[in-house]
Image (cartoon, rainbow, N blue to C red; front, top):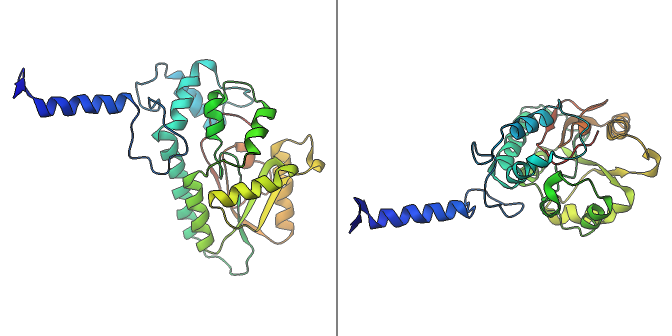
Length: 264
């Protein structure tokens, strides 16, 4: 049976395809961090205003700096990017390059080779929090964010967890270096382990002695201390440029995408 030259089976398949697309149904994103939104804003014409794509490029290349919030007109774009396929694919490219680099190294077997991982939006994902709080369009609210952190429910970024496991197999030790305060140590340790990050050489949180310092100054200082203890920072990965800039940054750095907030 047909309708205007189109067979009924083909017609109903077409309707089903439209329905699945309109509801944001996707079966090809493994280990989803958070439920997908109805649209994938990273696709070419789904979100009007190419300027938001250009803005994100400026952020990721560290040309757009010092911004306090995501531009309001880009709220939908950033949300769709973070919950769609493109964010995960971009993260996968970074993680895969880091793995290829690590596998190419001839490492001394003295236990002094380390890889520095940031935590938020690098190891652990706060997407469940940001999905409820505007994807960076609203000003940062430390009270609400710390309430979320203290739940200890942040999921892993799967691509970073894959990198973490590969590095351990290569005999590279892991150091977590985060801007989280020292009083969040216990919940951070528990969250990391629950997310699959079972072991590490050191977990460095920001103590009171670094109060008032920028992230670049604080993290540079802590990396310098590591090297003074004889460690070799062969790799460093983070979502903020302030994780990677400054001194003692390591032999090679890897920048994960994050258009939701800026830390200088």
